Image 1 (cartoon, rainbow, N blue to C red):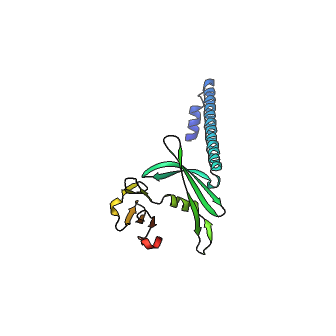
Image 2: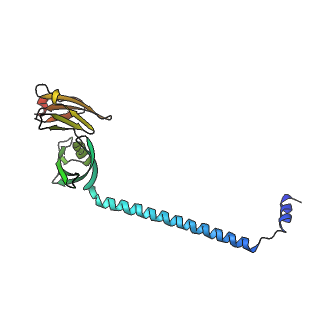
Image 3: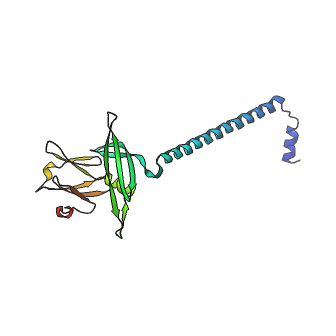
Length: 199
């Protein structure tokens, strides 16, 4: 007699109770019901995610308006950026909320020249680069401050013959800034610009 036949003979005398089969069926039904609930919850979550992404895309259609993080006087803040393209010229408006619920606006824009000399509107990346440029401010007390991302530098005493040179680093890139006292500034990623070059 083989092992298989021995097992069959040993267990053939055993009978299961009617309650056992009913309990097994109920457990299987509970597991099936639990799986259905899990599948329904996963489907609802997917619908919410896809619907939410669609809504966010519709509100930001074509990069018209979006929320950005911006450095202002060394502090990071949220602002609303709106980009328009009118007649081949890109323009942007930034609305910065203050603690009173009002907002301050900054505006800018322009055009870029391609390698072949053709004019084109600025891209969003070029506008963001323009927005993130260093800023020089002249205070009423006579001090001159340079702001770049999270950096605040008092450059008042660095001027010699009306010119100041400042090297800025943020860990990723280095900028060379040439400031003419109350007459603008120039920024380069490779060298200081001669004051005569940006007249």
